[in-house]
Image (cartoon, rainbow, N blue to C red):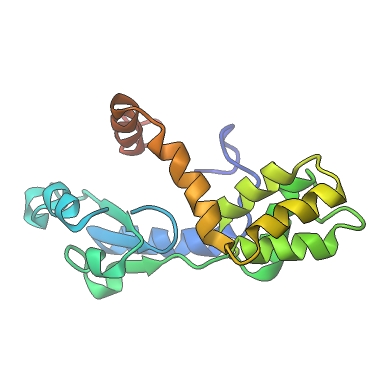
Length: 188
């Protein structure tokens, strides 16, 4: 999405290099996979969705996301699979700060706690946003208490919170979500 588009998220930290790799794969491969923390496609769902590549018109592209590389290897060539990398330290801290403090760096007195929070989130962008938004407007003692709850739980506990959001959707809402995910802005 072009940066001058009104719906472009200017808080996408570290996205440029990742977008370049995905764009290269889209231009080079008919079927590509993206794997890492984030979504999940079941092997049988993928088989039913993707089928055989020769069923699609020339110029069609299929992008499949999964936590598991081996699921993608069923329909993608090995060089058509991209592993999403977590943010580097400075990018993770910046993204977290944008959501926890509404600025690029932690507020004075919060640096050590912010470092712990980004580590607990595993530098996963969605986890950083959720955790930062959760801690927004809390005082230092509240931060300490919340981070103490996460200690040792790390990303698994954060992912449980994210999963709960999806699980609470009704059957129809889940179908709508999947339908919307299949459309590109400006496309019919």
